[in-house]
Amino acid sequence: MTDSGTAPGARAAEDTILVVQHQDDAGPGNLGEWLTDSGLPWELVDASVGPLPAPARFRALVVLGSREAAYDENVAWLEAEKDFVRATMARGTPMFGICFGAQLLALLLGGTVQKAATIERGWIPVSQSVDASEDDYAELVDHTWFEWHGDEITAPGSAEILAKGSCVQAFRQDGHLGVQFHPEVTETQLVQWMDSDRRLTLLAEAGGERADLLADTAKQLPDAIPAAHRLYSRFFLGR
Image 1 (cartoon, rainbow, N blue to C red):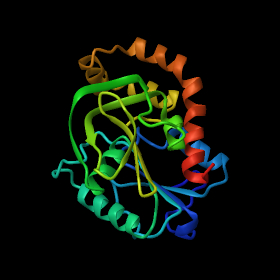
Image 2 (image 1 turned 90 degrees about the vertical axis):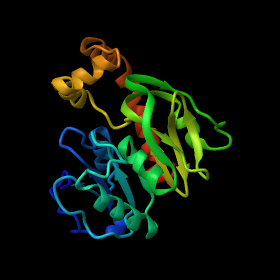
Image 3 (image 1 turned 60 degrees about the vertical axis):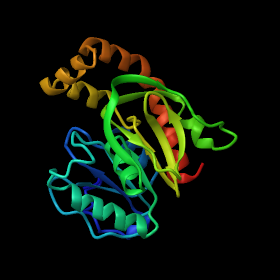
Image 4 (image 1 turned 90 degrees about the horizontal axis):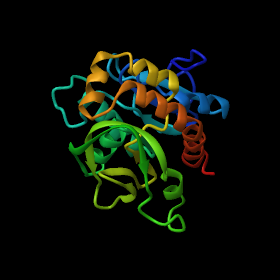
């Protein structure tokens, strides 16, 4: 459902941005707010709980994060989502993949995903890999972003790697964009995440603490959200 309560398929697909989530606590966050404020029609579906709509040429497709691994063949809903994303991209829909979504995009374009050499959980500086004069996306991804992942991408050989640190952080290919970080995150989401014993354990395993992460969030988020909006504007509006 969208914020306006419109069921998927109720408006022309080519006018609609389809957002795919995989769990209730990993929704579109500030991306959904930005889409609504920008007057862009969008619809939200959850790939983990029900069938996806028929593949179509949407205005854009967004695939959000997941606790699952993009290469785990035991995930019940994963093959259906791969088929849907592949067919939707084949119809000319540009995809914006975030975290798990970026990993799924890399796999479908011929790259690989594997366990990360360095687990990243928290606010991580991301540096562009190419000059902004070569690709204006590079400057847009050069920022401190929230990260929460234990897998990493080997980008397809034909992809342009926009940012790379301990792993590939952002890449582009054929009008598609994948980012390993979470531009969509909000303070409400992060507080909810930090109330989860499972996530607190994962954070501790990466050497982090709840109080430090929330303090970093208060410091970084006021700049990160406008940076996210600039990235959205470039991808969805071309400006």
